[in-house]
Image (cartoon, rainbow, N blue to C red):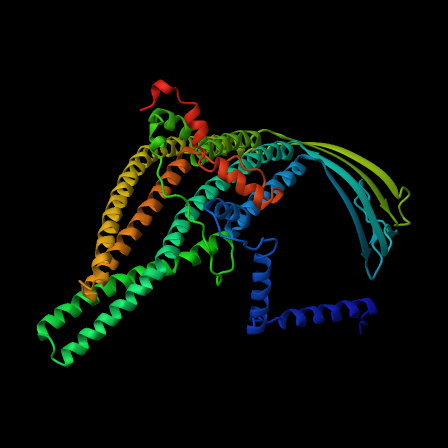
Length: 506
């Protein structure tokens, strides 16, 4: 009867324990307590290094806070930083491989060998032990592969292009963020300006509705006249409540964009409401030139085309024979070895014969990728040029809409002044007061909305042209300095206008 050695028994026990441990792993759902604790930690992380608001918030500071503290922008910056790290790591793929190995060998009986006579085929009666039952091995070896070097070289060049693509995507995200902040800021300004007037008018309309219903109940007026009166008051209330609902979300949206506490009340400093049509004096040809050279989408497609060309070169490099060099330093504790330390070197040339069949297909596939990248670049360029012309028209229309809304508001404001004089002499009913106040509020709201559309259209055109402030790393500049920089360069139109000859202005 065979007996197991202690080492065999230990191995069997370890195997059983390992298998039993693997079979007892079960899913562990998150608990309410752990989720709440992680939520508190995440909220604290989101507020790290965010300067508290002090005083009224200006538009320049709102944009600066969004660029510095917005959480989505932080993700973009981290993605760009990761691509830089990937580029650093890819450089190591071109280096030779230096491998250190150590091993242990054990068997429960001797490795015994016999020999056979090559002349007569007789098996020798002598038996030889050529290896110890237990011994250790170690080695240190360097190897360099020409194919791996070539592939790593082109992979590194492609990763360098991806770093530049990440920068262009960050630029595009910055344009979108600045555009969103401008729109949300003006919506919040209109909410701050109109909220109290809306609530006062709703209160007056509610009182007028109650008075009318009381008069109807007491039959002081014709029932049909009372119902018509109530219908007009209710219609004004519907408009006022719709305005109030639209204004109520503005501060939350702005707070989320600038990473301010969501429950806080933002006090905004209202900028001067003016529009400047000088942007449209820049010739459309100059705008097209700026878009072709600076638009993030076009630049990204240029980098993608370069990546596709590097892929062709990489495919071609894989079709060549591979040359491999290696040099190893070895040591073995086996006492039967006469030379327990030895060095060895080798050179190996290899070639995959199937490359003769698959090579042409791989090259055609790589060339098709280049053609696709070029076609995408052409399509993107034409789409961007279309956006330039559409953006210019949209901005011009937004200017016209604002001027019309401004004229309407000025007219309604003058009417309101006249009606206030009549109200002081009690020459008008509450319905007239509510209707007049509702009209004035609505026209002022539309004036703010039209100005927000001007800002949004201007920001869209600026994004299409690839214009943005020359902002250094937001982590290395203070909020105050960044705000001043935004105030000086936030439009980015100065350089574009300066490069336009005076005689070419349209």
